[in-house]
Amino acid sequence: MKLARAAKILKVQERDLFPLPSINSIVRVGKIPKAKSEVGFWVPIWKISAKYNDKQAMTILTMLKKRLHDFAIAFENEDSYLVLADEPLDASYADKILSEITEERKSGVSNR
Image (cartoon, rainbow, N blue to C red; front, top):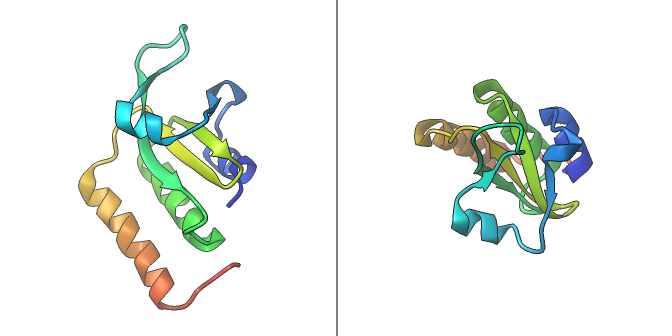
């Protein structure tokens, strides 16, 4: 799923889109500060890349949206980006998302 569509689904404001040469740097650092007018940090939640088809990416984004509310996106390009949120995602819910997209992969559902 392309970056612009993901940003629209998550309702990410333009000020919360962060172009980076490598999104792996954020994964290593663990968080980035929010805008000066806001308190807190953005934390990495999920890396979206070409390994996910559109249906899987949509499942990930909609499930994240059900659990969390404020999002930002750090991106290398239109196809590789990191979804950030204002709070961490608990491991049990991350496992639930993985289970859901694994089932989609097994059932052969594809939007490519």
